[in-house]
Amino acid sequence: MVMCIRVPKKEGETVRSALAESGILRSDHRIKAEGGFLLMPVSSDPGGWELTEADLEPQEAAEKDYRALSEVPAELRHLLPGSYDIIGDVAIIKLEQELLPYRHSVGGALLRVSSNLRTVMLDSGVKGEFRVRDLERIAGSGTSETVHREFGLRMATDPAKVYFNPRLATERMRVARLVREGEIVIDMFAGVAPFPLVICRHARPGRVYAIDLNPAAREFALRNIEMNRIDRIEYITGDAREVIGGLPQADRIVMNLPQMAYSFLPDALARTRTGGTVHMHAILERTEAGAFADSLLEGIPHPARLDRVSELKTYSPTMSVYVLDIVRC
Image (tube, rainbow, N blue to C red):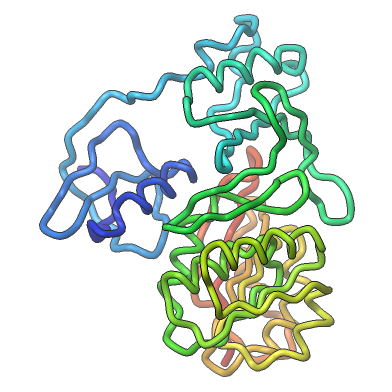
């Protein structure tokens, strides 16, 4: 038996693409049709869909492994990463210091195994006030600006200028499926507005307020709002802590700034209605995640309870990004 999620057929391709991009879709078993649903094999629970087990037909992974094509000394081959980000037609990969002399070979190998890629960028970490990625092109052509597709939406972005994480696609849809008609939603760190866009396309909120400090994020977000013909998003450039106090009480707040979202939690809860939910992201040591969750609300001057904790993605060998759903009491 294989762990899988049950997805309506009409959402099949968009969900399959999102799961593949986030690294959750298993390629060693076939997707199975069952009535009006598809059973998709997953390596972990992405949230938002019914989780079940099914007897799925095994298959050989069709996609070639770029590692076999990379011209890297045998003694270094084990350092080649097993995963990388794909944003639109741009691949972004992190490499250990020992592999940097071979980065162009690694980039070329990635292009050869994926015909949908235009360019490959080396990620050397984050830089600047807005903590955007420090990127170097190691194969292909053009810049890192691209159009990413997710759940029937097109999102213009440039990871060298603005924050964008393709691995949160299933989390964005999970949150969207929780939004009730007429809800007021605030995204405190909106970037190019992926959370607001998915919410407005797949739910019926009353209004979504998107906030970000980065002026470049606003430019891309407004393009995305127009390109996808969304009319319920109000985009605000500024410091979320200063802006949020002037907004209406929210039914739902998204805090996708895992490095420091916790410091904004009192401000978020102050702006959340009773019964409303804050979705806070945090980078935590996996061995300490439970203790963090247990003590999360200590000293917070607003009544609240922790409703859910879920691991979203790996951040380092010992750390992961988690989402914590906090309900205002």
